[in-house]
Length: 113
Image (cartoon, helix red, strand yellow):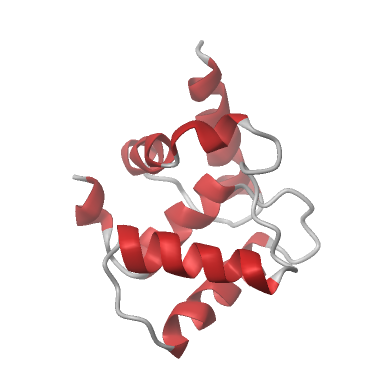
């Protein structure tokens, strides 16, 4: 099993056990691949939910640039909602899991087809 496949399994486990979601494995794989090499770096593979700058980066680089959404307060509301589902006390909030949940939240699965 490749390192990426192992990470996808870990992300799927987080979605099932921490977020109470049944992951669409095809979409999760595409979102993970879309994260690029950042998934292999301990620092960039997670989202520091307590840092406003990090949340702005998720909003600007993922929601606006990747998913093509228009800026507005609903974007940060969605990020906060996803972090709430993942669990504020959860130490490792994986970027791929958060991006997956945001993609589902906005119904933007077509971006990855």
